[in-house]
Length: 315
Image 1 (cartoon, rainbow, N blue to C red):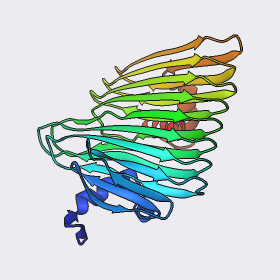
Image 2: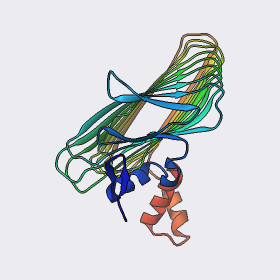
Image 3: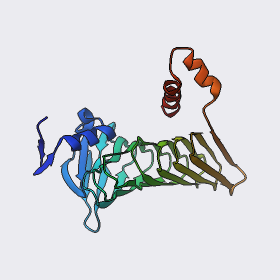
């Protein structure tokens, strides 16, 4: 495959492979986008309703979506192929009143050497009244090196009256260590939906921290975490949801544990208002034997049956 030139940078086969794991390449340049490679922006496109501006005080960008914009698409992928690099980026999203936007982010790391490679992405979302955002964030690691692939995403969401944000966070594979922090502050009638999917194996470590404040009447939050921990990996799930008004929330943590893995879940709800309706659930267990047996009767091996169950669980 030929190398593709992007603003004096070369996007080679490795780059394209990593990008393809965290976003659909044929959709990447649909709408506005900003591509970041090894700590530097290499290409950008803005549209009539979406502007992207480089920060002047620290690494990162500001993304502005005009009010009343409909069905806008923004891609902001990050790739790291330089071993030993620690990349920290601060991205702020300002979503105008009644706007509707689909945002795709995420980071892929390719590390073939012995030094650790790390990306810490701090994303803040400021939604005006009635704004709607669908936010998809994918994380992926690969490479033959002994250096770790480390990803520490931080997401802060500030929702004004009647706005909503749906967040889908996926850790595909190959990430050695991750601490994922998500914070939400909701005003009247705002809605925050989070779906997280994580798979760990080997000696990998994953920690998730959710902290949501329901400050407005009729605000709501739905948090769902599904994970699979295999081999000697470790996972920790911590969530705190504060009901400070007449509100509703539901948090759910479901995990499949295999081999010698460790999974710990600590969901917590704090009601500071008599009309707060807060629910939490947590379930951790191995794959049921009858599920495997049923699939094996259809001609699958035990290993194939387990994989089918896991694929369905994380779908």
